[in-house]
Each structure stands twice: as structure tokens, then as C-alpha cells.
Length: 420
Figure: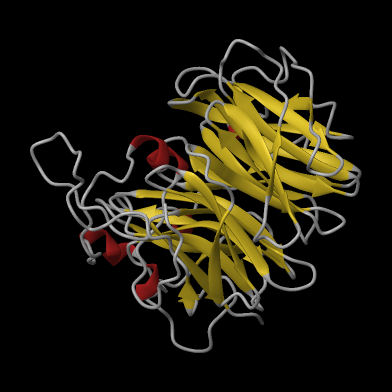
């Protein structure tokens, strides 16, 4: 892959989700987004001043890689052409830096190499190569107490971590595993506490049952795996971790990789010893993101396992959970709705995700002041045919990384919501 700096300044062209990255390999043709019949159930943009978490605009420019030409692949063995759109990549996660600026990480086809983006102002984004290793996916990012960036993910069937001081130059670090039988282990989440980093993930094949994994590190360089727990870690995968009080709370999914049956939580006083929480409120749901709420306790978000409704849960302590009652704002008539990330800003929490009808999605956000009732964002043209993946405070309101063009093509894009 050659990294270059043509800018995405108008209609951006999307982003690869992890599952699509592993399975689709960019093999479908791209067509411009058009308003489908499902759009009638979405709220129209309201008049008046823009509101934090409710209104969104594309940022000025985002670098994209030069990795595919919009031509027939010369080695394609099939009977119909493949249109490969230039500039496809995944922005998996985004963080703001304490000294100002932002960093995002992700990966780019056709070889699935890891890349990062940096921005000093949230508006202009520059792409960087992390390393040339193929089939390597950074999926989660955190800033440590000393300002060190830690990204985690997988390379082939092994977990891997990277550190950086600026988001542009990265050092790779091997991560020890507990098994030696060649079964894949992967890091899927990382967070930072006062004493370093805690990461989570799973061990198991791409399909069928997995077991949760946790690791800890003082500096993001040297990682120690948490010993396997046959009770706490069975049939689960960690999706998100947050510091809480003097310890950590994690959430994830239960069930096989292709058939999720519910969500799960864990609590830990130190990132090493974990207690599993199988609350009935998690039945039939997927919890994929968690945040300490400004109004007290915790908020986790995700969706029903069939994605017919975006879901939210609240907890005072990480040990007991209440599922927010269903409401029309988190549903999409005749289609799907799900959240992928959540963040706390001032006195609100903002969840981001997607609603989808027949084919293409519409990037969506939800705002809540209690974690129970959620107001859905306005729908501007820049959200049509797009998906929101991860959110960070700043810019001065909030920034989201996501995609335009799914499910056929994914090229990175960034959106901004105004501050108050």
C-alpha cells in the first residue's frame, strides 16, 4: 500500500468494519448513496442553532490511502468485474490528547496494514503508516497517565500492541498469550488507569466459542496476561473497559462469534482479578461500549442481538445493571439500529452508531442526561449512507470517526458536533 495525501473534502466514501474487513475484502462494487424508502422514519434536520451531539458536519479534510484503483482486479478469477474504490480504510478508534490535537488508528486494504491519523485541530487529518505487516488490525486506543498512546489489536492470530508519543510514529510490542496451540488470541479493548493500561479481548477461532482475556501493562510496552478463569471468562469476549472508582469495569458479549446470546460485565479492583456479572438485564443484548456517567454511575450501550433496537444500560457500581426501557428514538421502523460507542461530555452522554433500512445506513447519535431516555440526532445529508464508529470529546464539542458507502465500500471520514 502507498500512503498519499489526496483529501476527502466533499462526499466521503466510507470505512471498513472489522467483520467486513475480515470477510468482504472490498470485493463489491460502489454506487453513490441515494435516499431509500427507510429515510421517511428519520427526523428531519431542525432549524435553529446546532446542538452538541444532535447536529453533525463533516470536517474539512481527511487523508486517505492510495490502495485500490477503481478498475477490475487483474487477478480476479470470476465472471464479473470488481470495482475497487480508492482510499478505503478503517478508522477504528479516536482519542483526544491532553496537550491538544487528536489521534485515530485503523487499517487499510488490500493487505490490511495498520495506519494512524493525526490532527492538530480536529478538522484536518494526516495519515501515517504504523508498520507494513499484513493482516494487522489496531482496533482500540487509549492515552496513558504520562501521555503515552497505546493501541491494541491483532496481527494474524496473535495479540499485538503499539505505543506512540505523537500518533505518527509507533513502536510495536509483542503480547504474551496463555496458550501455545495456535488458537487465535486478540485484543479488542484498552483503557488507561492511574497506574498504566488494561486491555481485554478473547481467545478462540474466528467462528464458534471464545473465552475472554485480559492483560495489564504499566507502560504499554510490557504486557502481562491475566490467568484464565474457567468461570469468569467462559463463552465471552471483552468489548470495552473503563476506569471506575479505584478499579475497572468491562463489558462484552456472550455466545459464539457468529451467534451472540447476550451481554456480560466484569468488575476488577486492579485490572488483574476480575469478577463476572451475568445480570438478567443483559439477556438478548450486546454491550460494546461503556463510560463513567457525569450524573453518577456507569452507562453501557450496544444493541439487541438482532440489532432491531439500540440498547443502553445504567449501573451505580458495575455490579447491578438496569436496561433502559425501549423507546422509539432507539428504533428504526422496519430496519435496524445499534450503538457502537459512548462518551461523557459536560452533563450528558452521547452514544453513536447507525440506523439501517434496506441496504445503506444512516450515521446516528443519541443524547441522554440520565442514561434512560435518549434523544436521537437530527439527520443531515452528510449522515446519509454513512456509519458512526467511535467518538471523542473535543473540537470543541465532539468528533466522530466513521464510514461512508457501507456495505459496498468504506473510505474514512470524520464528523464534528459543536460545543455549547
